[in-house]
Amino acid sequence: MDYFNGARSQVLPALQRELFILILRELAGVQYLVNEVLEVTIEEDTAVLTRYLLPET
Image (tube, rainbow, N blue to C red):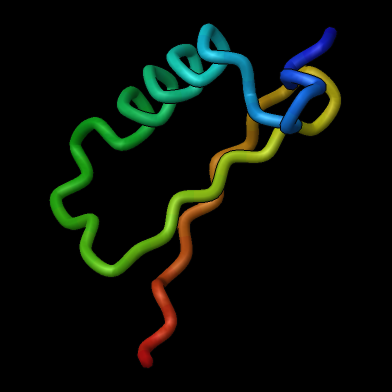
């Protein structure tokens, strides 16, 4: 499946919306999301959400 726009290797808008909805579902009920980074990667045909603390400056 082609997830990216070849011109600038950006995720296609339809997939962006789908991933955003998945992220919102995953974070439902999370009380605190402060100074965290959300990273979404696509591994084979699976979206993987990784959360980690934002490094202090």
